[in-house]
Image 1: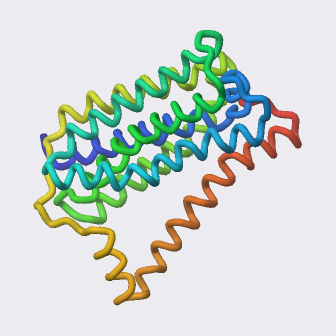
Image 2: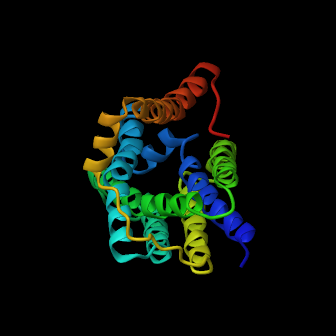
Length: 243
């Protein structure tokens, strides 16, 4: 498989994970109601926060395990498969499982903990590819941008079919990522590992490095804020349904 095809496959994997994630946003209040929540905004906030918190906690864990074992694709496949199971388990809750909403949030966190392994390691493999860092960044940008942009309108249409439908589609997308991970040559780390202490030390020695870190944090914070609040605001003010 050529580098161009590898880049396209890895970009497709990143796209699929982002698409699966954003599918849930347009009707998240409808979804949490079907999952047993008694409030719309508060429950929606916690439902999204549970996944994001798991992302923050477990992204480093997946990376550390990958670096220590010198493998990536098996963990991408495992994370994607775990995420697919998590989405499917959430889809089975409405009308089938007598779970409290707290238990649903725990299940959501487990789904996020698995999914971030597929996302973060696929991104890492894409960034580490030979053939030009600019090409790799472009592929990542297209994958992230298109997955985020297409997820909301597509998810809104899926909610018209039922509150659990976006979850089933997200599960299928993650299964596709797991399958793709098995056909991409494993580009293992070279053994050079940057610990958190080394990263912090580099920021202290070169304070200008804090700027891109701060930008990345604010960018993701703003995106997460508008993904939930913006969606609910426009739906409430203009009387719109998820579609």
